[in-house]
Image (cartoon, rainbow over all chains, first blue to last red; front, side, top):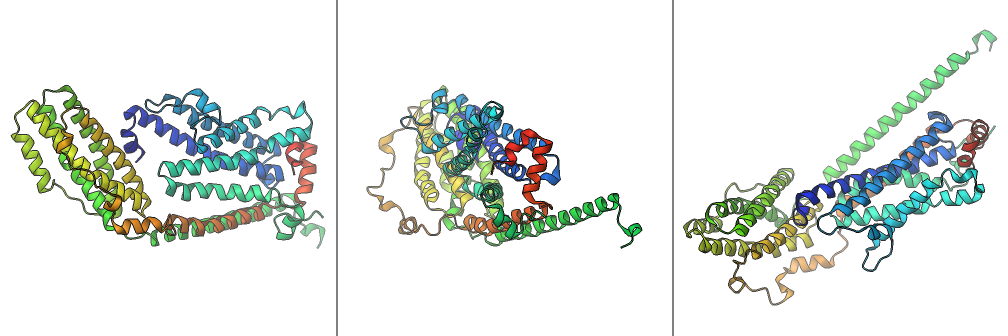
Length: 197
Length: 273
């Protein structure tokens, strides 16, 4: 269906670019949800049966790197459209006159994720608490990018796909992210964590 | 228990592995059951297509059946480069649109015609009868532009009012293509706008049903929303179940201490709470 839509706006070249943009967006969305899941499972120790802590943490970092890479491919692909191409400023500056909300929140979300990735190794040179606050910005970037995906799906007429595939990936990530902030005592009570003996 | 009956470390490890495997099998079974029930729910709730949704597929198919031969005629009978180019655009777009509509109709069980209707056959005959050159160009551009002008509002109404997400996406694509075709046909300079039907004088052109439906927001997104609502708690339950299976003796506090001892950098994650 995407092919047919773009027939009218830019020909076969734009059709290919928009397909790449759509594919990379879906890959980035799926990887972002997996990154959140894996990060929470690693941080809380729920996944320690699956491997050593270092391995788990590296898995989280690989997923996060792939998320950002696919997110960048998605954003940059709009530079190469024949009709209605974005310029670099439109991809980098979140609030520009005439800009849409769904683009603004995506730019903020992606830039936050890049900042988190670039500063991931800074904990050796800064106080742990400062680093932690920076890393926790991921919990802000995540809903912003989910909202961008939802609005993008509505705008492109793919809402049905998002309801099914998008929510299937989103719900585990959201559940884990919420559980991350539930006090340990409560988790023990519901049987998700065993009391120390 | 006598010392000789106590399980060895190897046996204990084996028992633990078996227990983990059992849990994995149980989880897979649950995933299969919930997945199947979700799919069943989606299939069971597939609503009947509205007649206008079906009509959209039929009319787009009919458009392809006469516009593709019309595009071909432009290659044979026109001397104008732009007319020929527009003819090629029409053929290429309708080839793809036709492929899409046949796929969609097969999926939704909508029967499609195999040949143009009588009006369209008449327009093609008119093009055949017109002498090659500017006279042909005028007949060709005028007939095609008029036909696009008729189908354009119809597709727009379906796009605005349909309850089916697949039809909505298709109508959106089709309305964009029709708009493009009207524009490129007019770019040939052979369209006489005075001879085209005038636009309706008020918004009453929209059917009362569609207007009434536009005010009824409660039914929007029906099937997908229901499926999503049905699946969301299941997914939450599955996540909780997986976590419950993954819990280990010692809880998170022990895990944090152990991890911090093994891997100083890891304490950052363990202490994030």
